[in-house]
Image (cartoon, rainbow, N blue to C red; front, side, top):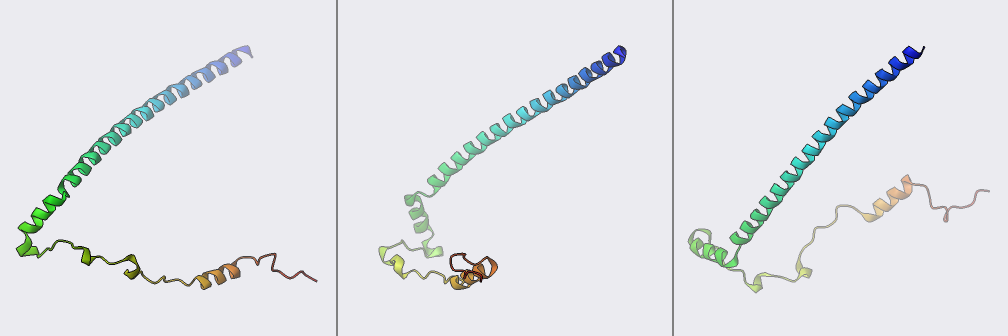
Length: 122
């Protein structure tokens, strides 16, 4: 009986050692992957900073003005003047496609009635 117990204990220890070994390698793989992702995030942030700087450089007003002047004959671009802007009150906003009353009625039909407005049962 003691021999069986020792054999089972030895098998349990070997099984737990195998499990711990596998978990250790899975953890190391996860840490390597996390470090690789952090490097990729850093690279992408650096690329984004470079692209933002390039965008700002290419959108300089004096550069755009020169390009507009160079290509005026072909594109017929004119400079923006204050007379081309209108107050916000003159901007036509789209009409909503839904009716608020229909939504409220649908909620009342699908939901329970308000207990405060219900008539008591007699």
